[in-house]
Length: 181
Image 1 (cartoon, rainbow, N blue to C red):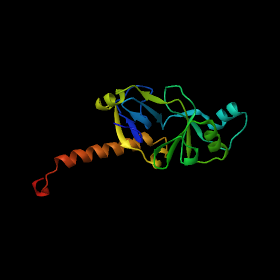
Image 2 (tube, rainbow, N blue to C red; image 1 turned 60 degrees about the vertical axis):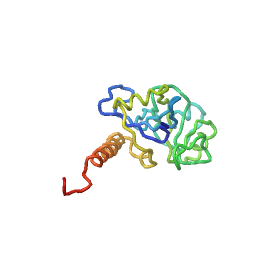
Image 3 (cartoon, one colour; image 1 turned 90 degrees about the vertical axis):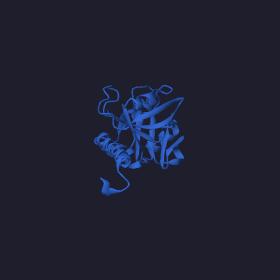
Image 4 (tube, rainbow, N blue to C red; image 1 turned 90 degrees about the horizontal axis):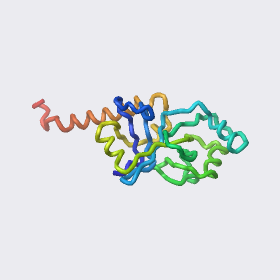
């Protein structure tokens, strides 16, 4: 299965502190391996602090830098500007790591965007096994969820996933004739 464009919602029972109550946007994902970004983990740093340290110049954004996961990697961004993208995750949502693309997003303050340090990754077939064990729930990503309120994202997406699961169960168990209910 290709997980790109899906949201992984941590099960309430997932105890791993790296992923407890997280929502992960799957950037790339297939049987060979996966890459995701935790949407609702914010760092205590602002993008402007990082920007000043790297480029020795200020920037106009006051956005919080997000922690994409426990795996070290390059600075990454999710955004809505196709001209500064290396990858389209879903219609209108793009991913970038290119320094020039990131600089354009910041210097022109082309919000909405999220910048990430770190990422989440799974080995071949590992994620499928974790989903089968009930550690994660899957729902399709939307721009509203990706750029929505990070503080409520886990509960909001868990409710969406739960309603989908409940609807699926009800659909399979309801008789065709409601009078038989």
